[in-house]
Image 1 (tube, helix red, strand yellow):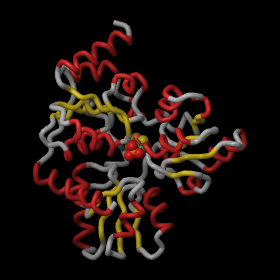
Image 2 (image 1 turned 60 degrees about the vertical axis):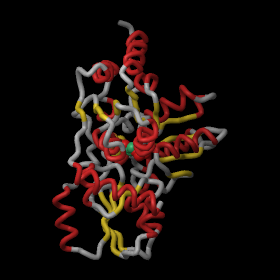
Image 3 (image 1 turned 90 degrees about the horizontal axis):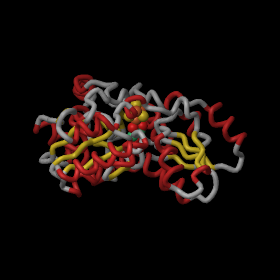
Length: 305
Ligand code: 13P
Ligand code: SF4
């Protein structure tokens, strides 16, 4: 079977089985092509809720499939490749957070939405990279523990000197590899380009940014800018923009070698096909009590953000 034949078969089978295929923008371009909806992690989980499908295939990593399940408990949510996990999302254990909370009862625990359901259940509020600043500012607590990403946490901390923000030593192993030399060299090559970057990147890189935001915000910004844009996030974003937008060569990838997330790229078209026809994948199950607690942290985020 050719790749195009396989793509057609996936779409047909998904339709026949009332199945929605969601794909994070970091997925392989072939998977982006057959997805019903693409976007960033929180957008996809909200979309799944809206679409009210009976069955969702979540092409991404485990925490993304869990987020869909938290918001849509009646939906069957399938992660096509169960080993697709996010190293950042799992860098702190729920037990460690519980211990911290019992030792520091006046400290609010703020979790980046890119964490496991078990961590969302332990925190006081979740934040996306775009709402983090507003939400931390709105919290009544002066003392904040920010988990798990130290880079997003330090970006927030720098702008809120009135808060005492404790950072967890977690990070995204993909974005954290970037250095200021990567951006300086590329800016020298393209002095007319603006630079948009994900806040999971180190502070020394964020300092050169014209725009800092989550995947969807980077895409929006890049589309609306007429000239060249250097993009500092997983290379799926530039792959997407360069094939879906006019003058695609104006999107310039920062360090294509570093900015590839193996966990996001592990899922293949064959995996998706097998998941659609029910021969592969894990159906995500969450303990109802844990799901309710995780949902509360997300609802608080929506209320404050
Ligand atoms: P977004 O929430 O921006 O989609 O982030 C996903 C991710 O994995 C970032 O590295
Ligand atoms: Fe996790 Fe980083 Fe991969 Fe995103 S890019 S899924 S944060 S490891």
